[in-house]
Image (cartoon, rainbow, N blue to C red; front, side, top):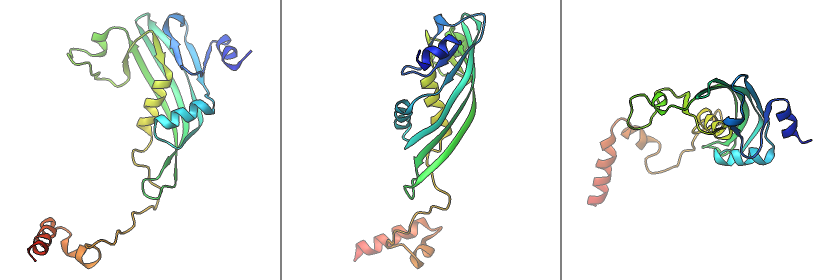
Length: 190
């Protein structure tokens, strides 16, 4: 018996390539727990999709519960270590993520996007219910929001380019943006 079927027999969803919970297969009367512990291949794919060097120590655990057949609530905890490239030094920047996730899946589009012609939800925890709940997509979204957009190692600095406006010339043009243009105009006139 493989790990996936062992977890499913216990009422727990185990990670697999699609990471989807089929809503029709979920119990309306009892919560359905899930425990996503993906292998290296899936973590590698996830790292590539979020432009990270690696994702490790990953776990996404929680449960999905029906409020009604048209409304489902997901609550869980996502933990992961993400390694990104420093934008300055190109070294490894490690970020530990440990975040609670709550989502409400509603079948009625008017409740998800109240009074809007263009479907943009007012509440970022509300999503339109489809036939499956995509745990992989949710994981990717949360990781993208949690990791730094411009990862930077502590103490990393951009080296001085040594251009024509370095040192004393830079001090003279600081706070005077048109001074550089004036200098350029003088050079062009020669």
